Amino acid sequence: MTKFNIILFHALLLLSTGAYACSCASIRVEDNFQHSQFVAKAKILKITPDPKNKSYHDAEIELITLYKGEHLKKLKILSTLNSSCRFLPSVNSTWLIFASEWQGVLSFGFCSGSLNLSETFDPIKYTKAERNYRRGIALKQQVLEYLSKKKLFDPNPLHLTAFNENLEMIEGYKNKDGFAVFQVDLTTDLSIASIKILKKFQNHALTKAVFDSMKKDLTISKPENKTTANPTRMLIFCYCHQFDSGEGSVSLF
Image (tube, rainbow, N blue to C red; front, side):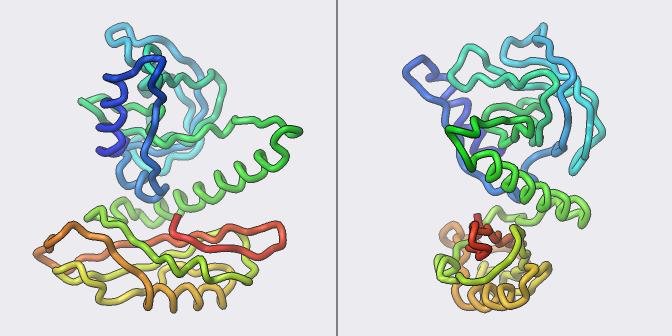
């Protein structure tokens, strides 16, 4: 969990009754990768209750793909079965796991951002859910593979937030689901000094349109009066989501 997610989760846990619903902060996959100590695609082989702490279960896992962290065969699940944030995956299910340390325990739970790759949907009631879910999962795995292969474990060291509301005006381009990556260099007062393309979209015209918008309209949200001793940089991921027509929309989320 990220620090914010952990605080939110435990605040809700203290209040948890049947009247309270569990809620988690939304986080981008690249930020979740940065904040997590262990990120992997894994199959859950066995689950047993933690004999010392009722808030946890012990999971034996089979690693399929390791994106970040050590090769593990066991992992804690923050199950909290007596709360509205109860979380207990099924044995033999496959997950995209984001695990973080909390009070010395490495675990994943309801608010960790982990994704069930074995999830199924009613094809009659939700005709496009299965396809859209798989596309979203595939895109997230592309990002994780990129970050892991490039060893980009700290893509946003100051935890800044980027905005570009005019990206939604970019439309009419055909492109597969994918992402582009921009390197943003910042001055000591966190003003934008320069922007560079690190990874392009498949459609080069779309890349140019987004790059032009980033140079003109990108805004970095920063705490008031916050400065750094030295110039710094952050990576910004821009996503293209394809419609059935073949055209796509782009956003930073």
